[in-house]
Length: 310
Image (cartoon, rainbow, N blue to C red; front, top):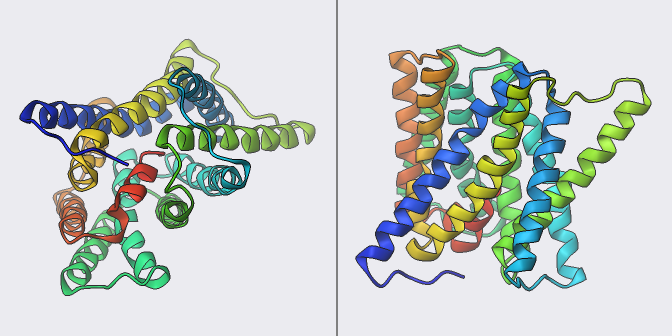
C-alpha cells in the first residue's frame, strides 16, 4: 500500500505530515469541549462531523480518481462505519462530558494493547515476552491514570469502551480493506456513519427530543474544526505521511496525539495531571512504542491505515 522513502527529504516531509496529523487529531477532544459549551450535544455534534467530513472526503476521492470498491467489498466497510465507528465515537465524545480530555485521550490510547491481544486471539499472532511486558506496562499505566481521578466512573468506563470498540474496528477492518484505497475507505466510513447518525437523530426528533447543534458562533467554529481539521485534514496528512514513512514509523509518530491533547487541555481548559498520572500516561505511551518496535498486531500497514479513521 505504501512506498518507502528514498531520500532524507522524503522522511522529513513524511514526519512533518504525520506530526500535523497528530496535532489535528489530538486537538479534537478540545474542539469537542468548546462545541459542547456552544450548545451542541453528542448526537448533533457527531452528525455534523461525519456529514461534513464524508461529503468533503467523497469529493476529494472523486477528484483524485480513486477507484471505489465493488459492492461486495463496500458492505463490510459500511458496517465498520455505521456500527463500529459510530459506537466508538459515541463512547468517546460522551466520555468527554464526564471526564477530563487528557484522561480520555490517554485511556483511548490503550487500543494498541487491545489490538495486540485480539490479533493473538483471532489472527493467531504470537505473543512474545516483549509484547507481554509491554501489555503489562499498558495496564499498569492505565490503572495509575484512572486512580488519579479527574473523571467520574461513567467517563472512565466510556473511554475504555471506546478503546475496546476501536480495537475491534481495527482488527475486523484489517481483513476487509486490504485491496481498498485508504481514501475510499475513509469516505465510506464517514458517509455510512453520517447516515446511521441521521437515522438516530430522526428517531430522537420523533420522540420530541431533537439533537442539539451549536447555538453560538464559537460552537459552530469548533464543530467545523472537528470535521475539517480533526477529520479531513488529519486523514489527508496521515496518509501523506504513511506513504513516505511506512507503517512502523508512522505509528511511532502517532503517539504524539495524546501528548497534544494533554498539552492543549492544560493550556486551554486548565486541566492538570498529577505527577502520578503523568507517570501513568508516560507508561502507556512507552508501552505503545514498545509494541510498535516489537511488531505488534496493531501496526501492519492495513491496520495503521484504519487507525487514521478516528
